[in-house]
Amino acid sequence: MKRCADVVIIGGGIIGCTTAYFLSKYTRDAVLLARKGIASEASGANYGMVWGQTRQPGYDLTMARRYLELYLTLINEVFDTDIEYEKKGGMTVFFTELERKAAEIVTRSKQSQGIPLQLLGAPEVRELEPSLSEEIMGAVYCHEDAQLNPMLTTIAFARAARKGGVAIYTDTEVLSIKTHNQSVQSVITNRGEIKSSIVLNAAGSWASQIGDMVGLKIPVYPHKLQSFVTEQIPHVLNRVIQGAQIHRNSSLEEAVQGFSYTRNVSAERPRIGQQPFHQGALADNTMLYIKPTVSDNIVCGTTFEFVGHDKNTSYESLTLIAANVKKTLPQLKDVHIIRS
Amino acid sequence: MRLRIKSHPILGRDLRKDMVSIEVDGKVIPAYEGEPMAAALTASHIKVLRKTKKRKEPRGIFCARGICTECVMTVNGTPNIRTCVTLVEKSMKIETQEGLGKWREKPKQARKKI
Amino acid sequence: MERKAQTSEEKDIILCRCEEVIQKTIEEAIGKGGDTLDSVKRSTRAGMGLCQGRTCQRLVAKILRDKTGKPLEALTPPASRPPFRPIKLDLLAQEGNKTEERE
Image (tube, rainbow over all chains, first blue to last red; front, side, top):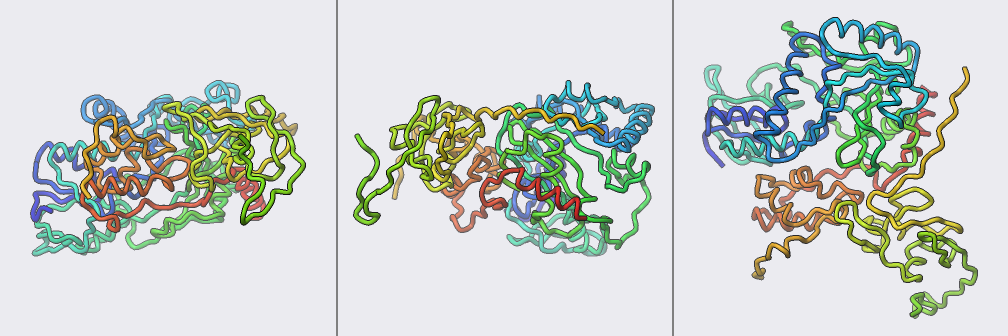
C-alpha cells in the first residue's frame, strides 16, 4: 500500500469513485480507501434513478440534467462495462382524488419552471404500462427521466479511475486522521498510515464520523429505505414507477410536497446536532416504488426511517411494501421474493 | 429399467399402492400423491427439467435438497417451482421450463363501483 | 499441489449455475480490480440468482484466493439477507394490508 499520496479519498461509493475518476485526469498520485469494497454500502443498494421530475428547479435540476448528458459521454467513451442505462421516462402514479389534485398542481408548477411533466389519465397510463392496476387514476410522467444500475455504474467509475492511475484499496478502514495547525498530515488506516495534505470525505452516511476525526460537525444522517427483490419475471413493467410520498391524513399541501423529494440544497446551513425523525407510523412512511431491471428481477420499495446504521429489514416494512406492490401490479402477487 | 426402490435395507418395503396422474408437457405420468415431484419425474425417466435462460442448456436435479434451484419447473402456470421439495398433487400440470418460464395470465379484476 | 494451467475452452466452465456465469468472466472481473467476493458478485451477477450464491460462493472464493493470494478466511462473504427461502409476495402483502388497517 502507498505510504503517501497527493489526495486520499475516503469512501468507495458513487461519490468517491466518480471523484477518483475525474481526479485521475489531474494527478497520478491519488488513493481511494474503501472500508469494505466498491459500492458495498448505499451505492450498492441504490435505486438507480436519474430523474428530473422530482427535482427542485434551479441548481438541483441543472445538476441532474448535466448528469443525464454526462452519462451518455461516459458510456460511449470511458466505461468498459454496460451500466444498464435506459432512458424510458419516469412515472409517479396515484390512486386517490387528493393525489390527483396535487398532481395537477405539481404538473402545472413544474412545467412553468421548465421541467417537461405531463399529467396522464388512466387510459394513457395503461397504454404505457398495460400491467398496472385498473385502480390507478393517473400519473405524472416525465419523458426525460432515466434509470441505470447503480452497482455497475459505481464499479465502472472505479475501473476508469484505476485505469487513470488511482490506487484503490479495499478492506481498508480509516481509523483516525492526523492534523497539525488546522491542516491534514496523514490518514491512519487498519493497514497503516498514508501521508497526505488533502483528504476527501466521500464516506456517505459515515461522513459525520469522518468529520469527527478532525473536529468538524457534519450533519449527515443515515436514512433507511427498505426494499426487496423478486425472482426474474419478464415483460411486466417498462420503466420505474413510483408513488407520491404521502400519508393517509395528508393535506393537499403535503400531497403536493409528496411529489418531489424535499432536498436541502440552499446555501443556508441546517441546524447542527438535531436528530431527524419521521412522524407517524411506518404505514405513513411508506412509498410505492417498483423498478424493472435489465436482468428481469423487480426491485420493490420502500419505507423511510431514521434508525442510525441498522441495515436490517423488518417483517413489518416488507409486508407494507408488498401490499403496495400488489395493489399496483396485481399480477405480481404470486411472484417470489428472493432477497431483501 | 425400473428406477423406484421397492425394497431398501434400512427404509424397508415401499407399501404405497394408489397412484395419481400428473401431466408433464401434456404427457400423463403416474405418481404417488405427496411424494416429491422430482421422485415421480425420475421414476418416469424424465431427466431434463428445464432449459437455462441465456445458454439454453438442459438442467435437472443437482442438490436434491431445495437449495440450488436447478430442478425448477413451471407448475400449474407458476415458474421456478423446486421439484425436489415440492410434493405431488393429483392433476398437477408440469411444464419443462424454458428460461424464466411463462406466467399464467391473471384475469383482470372488475372495476369496483363507488 | 501444482495445477495444470487451463485452456481457454476449459475456462468456459459455469461457476454460477443460476446466472450462467463462466470462470473466464469471473477472472476478468478480478483482473479489473474486483478483489472482494462482493465486488465480483456485483459486477458479474454470480450469486444474484435464485439460489443467492448458495452453490457458487465457495467456487468463486477459491478463484479469488488463487488470483489474489488472499486466504479463504480473509474473504468477507457478501451479506446474507432474508428471506431464507423464496417467499410468495402475496403472503407478505396480505399481512401488510392488515397492518395498514391496524395502524
